[in-house]
Amino acid sequence: MEIKVKYFTDGIEELACVPGSDWVDLRCAEETVLKAGEYRLIPLGIAVALPEGYEAHVVPRSSTFRNYGILQTNSMGVVDGSYCGDGDQWRWPVYATRDTVIPKNTRICQFRVVENQPPLTFLRVERLENPDRGGFGSTGR
Image 1: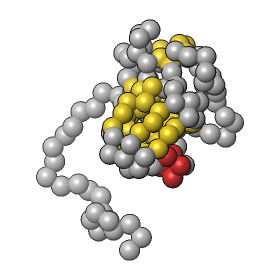
Image 2: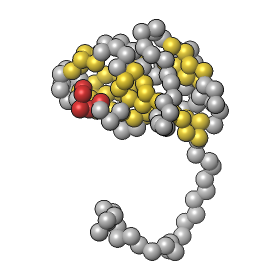
Image 3: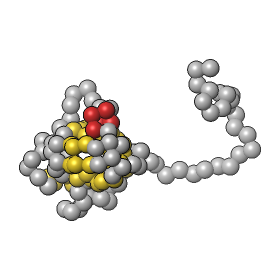
Image 4: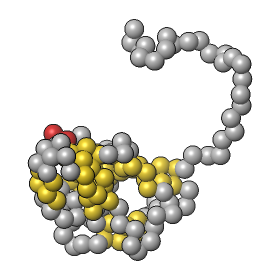
């Protein structure tokens, strides 16, 4: 599948798929200085024209919190296919738990391209025919 990408800076590495991984790393497009308790939309330096019928899911890399003490504020970002114009730069919403500096071109988050959910119809029933698992938090008991 071919995906068009516009870069807002030459100072970051271009997107690339790594063999064996389903996720693509995203990079900080500018040095970002954050104080503890500060919120910021970190520019990721790209705009993407996703194929019709697809969206992108954006999450932190596993080492991002350990290395920089930042948390993604919306748990998982969703970039829908309509966010595809020349000025639609992807940004990553973060909250700093400590003072930190994130250098330009640092891999800070990652994304994957996923098909949109198909149309669904919900049917109200009085009973589900499946066995109970034991309620919330019951896995492994």
